[in-house]
Length: 214
Image (cartoon, rainbow, N blue to C red; front, side):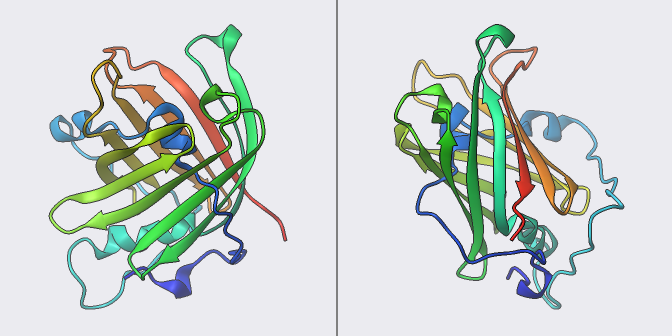
């Protein structure tokens, strides 16, 4: 269970029923799971982040599950998407994340300036983060940019300061996406989305989340 006592100090109950599938439905979303299966995991911890203590007497995934509490709160979002620097689409918006049923974190996003995934009229997205038994970190995303649901699987590193994901299945003709999320501080994190189908893994979207001040 995600420890409510460790939620960010500025957490708010505001939760727009818009959604951050933007990130995933945005560019598609996920992690670089391929790398994790063949390379040693980097367990270095960011000393700036507060320590999150998992519940006592839980299963081996509880530490990773507790780390999802870092996402809880209201965030101002800014970033861009696009495959070429001269044609990038910028956007701004607001996102809110809350604990759902004690085990999951639901992150909703509303775009206030620009378009989700660079598409006119696309303004909302959502993603549900979990650490599932015998699977690990998962991310399920949806939004008004696509009628489909994106599913990603990955891992947690650095005592919950980094999250890596990769799409598990994509429709014919659509490239798989990977996502790397990193917390620089308790009040700021970034999401880097890459084309996992390309050996050079070019960055196709980048978003910064800054905790909104009350």
